[in-house]
Amino acid sequence: MTGGAMTTAALAPRADLSSPQPLRVAFPIVLEGDLVLSPEHLGPAYLAAVLRRAGASVVIRDAAVNETAALVEDFARLRPHVIGLSITTVSIDEIARFGAAIRAALGPQVLIVAGGPVATHLGSALLAAPGWEFLDALVRGEGEVPMLRLCEALHTGGDLGEVPSLCFLRDGALVETPLSAGVGQLDHLPDPVRDQFEQHARRFPYLRVSTSRGCTSHCTFCNAPHARNRVGPAAKPWRGASPARVVDEIERLVEAYGVNTFDFVDSTFEDPGGAQFGKRRVAAIANEILDRDLRIYFNVCMQAAHWSEDDRPLLDLLWRAGLEKVLVGIESGSQEGLARWQKKSTTEDNRRIIRLLRETGAYVAFGFISFHPWATFSEIRENSAFLRDMFGHNLRRFTTRLELYPGAEVIEELRADGLLDETFFRTFNPFSFRYVDERVERLATALNAIYGAEYAESCKIHVEPAVFRFETDDIVLHTFASRLRRVHGSDPAAAEILDDFAATVEPLKREMAQFNFALVSDLTDRAERDDDVMAAAAALAAPIEAFYGDRLRAIEAAKLRAGFRLRRKGFDIAGIQTAPPRSEKEIA
Image 1 (tube, helix red, strand yellow):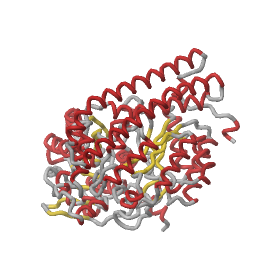
Image 2 (spheres, rainbow, N blue to C red):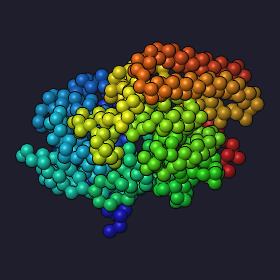
Image 3 (cartoon, rainbow, N blue to C red):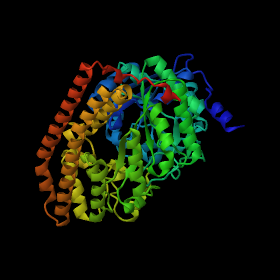
Image 4 (cartoon, one colour):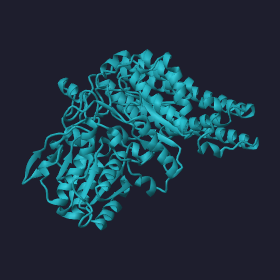
């Protein structure tokens, strides 16, 4: 049997979950981390699609962390047979509290099963962890096939021991069933449901699309599926849906909802490994978008080591197809730091990809780890200089710390060096580690306490400071200018207005870069001298808030002036909310 046939057979229902009464399944989503900006969670959306195809009655509901009590009441009325919890590191505390409340409200008759990256890597240890007594089972790895088999077993009175990739309790004893490979042919998956989009009145900033699974790299801080942390039998470390299948899904969403902005959630859009096969695939996706005249925008993730000057034509093609924002895993401005995380890229690779993308017209977002347990003052200064040159207007990148995720290789490295706080496996606090140099630890804590004590302790924030607002607004600002240039940039009058806008904003960003670099450099010097860096940073919190607030207002005023001038000249500003028209030259 071929891999495709095996995938089709595994995803095929073996029982009618609608008869005699539909099996009721609920997926609650607690909005933390990335799910705050846009709540859509594709994991449960894929599971819901598979289960509905089998006849189950499935609901997805989301709630902010301060609204989960209403979600518990909602589910108490629905009386589901199965509740599926997707756990991420950032949401783990809220999920534990929510799960306990659900159990108290619904009693023992509901089966509560967990999944996601935390459940995958902790396995049966999570079932035995304090505070997780409400869990009946968890799925490790990709959930479509295990959840289908689990629901079928529950509906028909089957044996949970026959469900693949399942950890559960039987008569008080832990049972772990054999792990199964993930879905081999992604083209055979149904489209994920869009319940959350409907529930939010179709007002998301973008819809998420998955074009691939896995990653050919093996960064030591990462617990997403990659070449060295695969769970179960040898599914390929990377699998991609066909270009036609990817664009079919996008086209269906455009036709059904009129949306035009998409976030591709792949770990690396161009994988595998930066080779030509992967680049031919993304070129084919771009050409499909253009050939169908879909007029969309999209965001992707890329790896710096995969792109060179020779790839300018491909980057231009992607931009013409709608590429708008790229997240690059930069992680360090120091070669020592890149080696620490086993990144494939060099500092020169990082500088080159930033330049190439900006010259293409894309916004460059990035991952960065300024502070970690092995950091030295020399490395911190290298990182600060790199950030000043590349992304200096964004203070958060100067202050970002390593975060621990269950399943990441760095956890064992920390343990081997005696730097891991073993309470991590009870608390899952992402900062459960010590620093080699206590002065560096104090500096990292002081810089992050600028955003609030809770953020410094656990990376959680409930009142967004101006530094955080600027990070979001900077993307919105680029979108505003970039889309207007796509739509109206060929007109000299519009181009002049947009050039004036850029001439106003860029000096403000350079000023912010110098402010950030000077601030962090001064505190770094103080920390190295073993001064009271906590007190020094605390005294800066209010001035930083005021500085960023002033620049936010100045940039917003410049944006409003540019918009007013464009409207006065007769240009349609509302047009940037829809995809731009393309000329025959662009399509060619």
